[in-house]
Length: 525
Image (cartoon, rainbow, N blue to C red):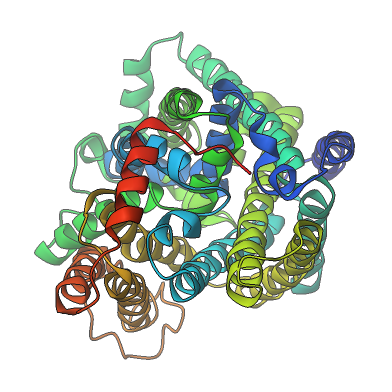
């Protein structure tokens, strides 16, 4: 970007990394047990965990992607924000308290509570690993894709090196700090992010004399779509298929958010269900503030930078916020925005790495391989080793996907979570008859149906933005399979349960219901 100061960008980002690494190192001195490593000893308050929750969720896609989508598509771009906020109000309020009361460290604890432990924990770990790795690859590839715009690194080798550096730092966060260190990284990153978008919003509105109407009027003048950008239908209303595709995407966003493994795992970092509820309230308010700011930033980018300039920039839609920052505040504000974008990627991937490694170590190693009798210190060592493996896979996947369309990976992560996890969690928490076969059918039915439909969708082939634009095996017409795979998972869980001759464990079901409602016996052990 002409006028960008690469040294400012690197300096701000480097300061963030050094600060957070120091905090992670200090936090690591208190990692004395598996509970400390996985759940920070349940020592965080609802307010602290709520801020960390927002940090876990607000990825680079939220910061750069949504503001860019609004800058190009107007109202339809803002629909992503609405879907994610609704997800917190509905999904997490519904399951947060029960999840915290029932589980211990991972989502598999809840799914396997009254089922046969080994097959259900293995299935839960498989789903967690697949979702986390796809999400991480998208984030890492996004880091490489932003290099050309933010740090003026255009070569594939240079972008690959940056991806590797981001991967190494996030693995250090997990290895050294565990959940305590990762949580403090998320809190700091969320604070930086909210402060940055708030300042950018204030500076932006000031450019128009604090008159939003004047900004929107300028935006319609700079957009080739004119007044249409202020109304729904620009992107998702052209055909009946696009309308169904939007409904499918909305289902994946709303239901997937409430079942992302790295988000659900964070509820174990608070001491009780009351603090879990407070976490959701704090996270929701943080996200409301953030997304209102991104709405202003998106339309402000349309007004000051222009849609044509944004779409022709090296980062495409993702360049809207950086271009606006440079327009409003010059190289310094651009440096802050760049650093926040990198820090966002770094922190989100660290949270995902911790979740994937904890799921394998706790669900597979400790409960499947060691039959629940693993030494806690050895379990933590396995988690750390798994974090290294997962980090390497994320780096290699991000380098391989660099330069390609990675939007489908994010959509796949949400659709996978909504398909494999949410039906199983709801059945486990609310259906007394649910049994082991129903659990396995629900998890694997949602997981495999979602993957198959994505592979044969326009996200993979048949369009210019597909991963394989010159191939044509897109017999499934929707880019997001949520509207099909989510009901299939519910149906599979139902059929698996009623067709099974194995009755549900009545004693375990009663214990789970009491624990979920009251929290009795739910202390982390």
